Image (cartoon, rainbow, N blue to C red; front, side, top):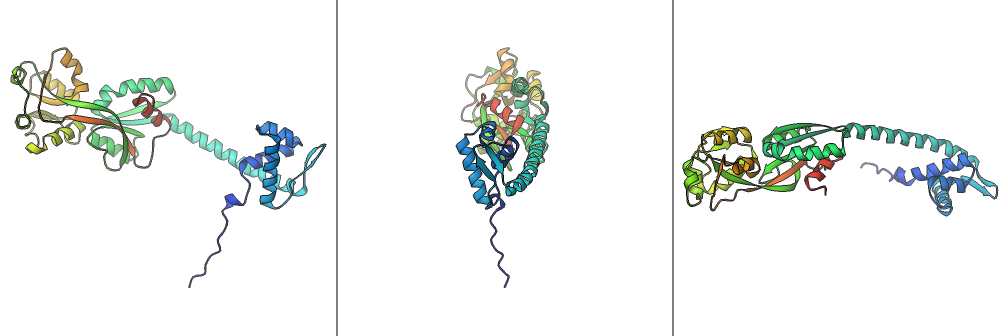
Length: 309
């Protein structure tokens, strides 16, 4: 049988905390418990209580009090010397942690899916620049799958995706919503329709589509799943800008973010085609690796995307 090891009281329960050690050092330096209390911003009764608690914990008297002030006992002199080393080590730890925070806060790596990167993120980054002018921001723009891969590889501090759910391995928060719309050039036959498209018509038509892995494609595939998904694409493009340009040129219809085509619809370079019986709404999410809530500039940017909340 293995021999049972004795239970050891944790070190934190056997030694005074930093506040008590700082108080003892102040008493040694100033020769007065009252002056030490004022320097540390606590009341004299609180300081006396802290010294008594420290003496009980260590089992020795540390300070002798008299009308002329406070004097360290012989044991107090020894404990003060040890306390000084502990406090100096804590100061070194604090300085090192501050250096790490400064290094972390000097940069922010963002990965965003194309629609968010092109139409929402620029405004957020301008606002972040106002709040954190010393932070250098790098941006990767790709589809939602590529954004997730960057985060999981530790190559981004915060990500933004569009789609139906949080990618595997990530946590996230909904920061907004978007709607996909069917658009064509003004001369397309659909632009002269009197009624909306039905799901079967949309699924059967060759469309200019975003690539698989994009949030736009994910939502469209899910919306048309009952019809077997969209037909073989007329074109499959890796950016919203390229897809939009192809539609404007008359190459064919597409399903794109309302955010991306608002200007073209207002200028009548594109026409929105109503569709009945298809849900084309999606969530916009900020995402990060599971268990690693954003900190520093990433947390600041997250707050800006939610209206500063």
